[in-house]
Amino acid sequence: MIKQQLSQKLLQKLSPQQIQFIKLLQLNTLNFQERVDEELLENPALESGKEEDDIQSDEQEDMDYSSEELDISDYMNDDDGGVQLSGDYNSNDEEKEFMPVVYFSSFRERLMEQISGLIHLDQDELLADQIIGTLDDDGYLRRPLTSIKNDLLFTQNVQTTTEDLQRILTLIQGLEPAGVGARDLKECILLQIERRQLSGNNPVYKLAYKIIHEMMDDFSKKHYNRILKKFDISEDYLKEALDFIAKLNPKPAQSGAEGAINKDYIIPDFIVKESYGKLDVSLNSKNAPELKISRSYSETLKSYEASKEKSASQKDAVQYIKQKLDGAKWFIDSVKQRQNTLLMTMNKIVEIQHDFFTSGDETDLKPMILKDIANAIQMDISTISRVASSKYVETDFGMFLLKDFFTEGITTGSGTEVSNREVKKILKDAIDAEDKSKPLTDEALKKILHEKGYPIARRTVAKYREQLNLPVARLRKEL
Image 1 (cartoon, rainbow, N blue to C red):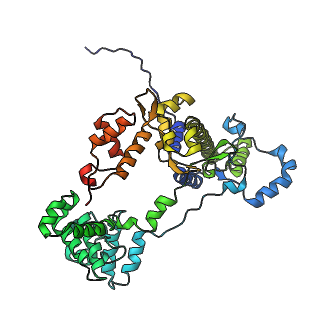
Image 2 (cartoon, rainbow, N blue to C red):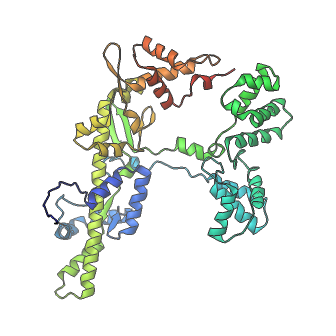
Image 3 (tube, one colour):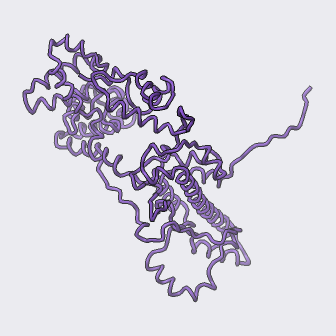
């Protein structure tokens, strides 16, 4: 017999507006700007700020027009006092200019330009385009040629052979930068050594080639004694070869302009500057775009609403316009909510990490976790996590990832709680200053920290060392 019973469940369900806000919140400045542009294209009821001529014209007609100005609340039930949103955070017009982003052609475009002078058949150009398009961002070709052959057959109905693909790949591997098109690190280094060998008959180049070609595994594990024994050479001669290899680039495609743009052209989401002893926090102006409801759309809705007789097509038009106006209003509200949340979070971070923002010394960072900020501004931890994700702040001391300000706390021998960044800095300084012929083990590093008043375990030392991307002692050893 089937039994029926009632039960109550408390579920949290996000509205479409909340989902939209959450998605906007986690975007950095560049992606947010792209999202705003996308919304402006998709929703004709949403418009960006006025043109210069329109602003001047409106200023002249302001007194005459004010009595007729549209009140969207008649249609939108808007009670927040208006929907035009502008960048109120920087009153100076010069500060509203977007940070310049320099354009660099991609390494794939540069490769196609180079190879165009080496091939003359349309089929070869197509193969080259396919291979170059398959390269990873670091310049490696990690997809097998047989798979590329199948890609061409199934997606472009082009029949070729792995031999033809290898012929084109060999041409690509002869282009700049040296090492591009390699299928693994070993081939990448060998390609660069071969390029150097063309410039002169240097015995160091030959030794370096033999080491990588014949003893790559021993080289990567720094088993130098085996290499010395294998080639019967002196330590000084080996050191010359190792120094030469160390100058080669393991990621050839990131050595030029594109690598520079990743490092030097980061767009900050926040700006924190000290002025007359006070820290000023502001948003990048592109986080505060001028958005408004389309006047033509709202006036069209007004005329339809005023019409006594409405046809079916007019009713559909009214429904469509209302939908677009609602979407525009929700988007503007989400953008405004995003701005407020970003500023609230950043202001609290600056308040807690005030010493760092005035000194620039990482040892001044205080222990701080997401929960600390969430509790302070009464928001959910997930909200703070989205704010901290992939966002940068520009300070008087350089550019920093927001998430770098969130660190664990460590209790010193005296009972004082400090940020683990302070411990990491001591570790890095110790490793930078070590004798590379006898690098410090994790146990030795632990003793150094203990002497400085940080009683942490060896496994914690290993964890922090790995977070600093520093290898174990054996792999740091140099001749």
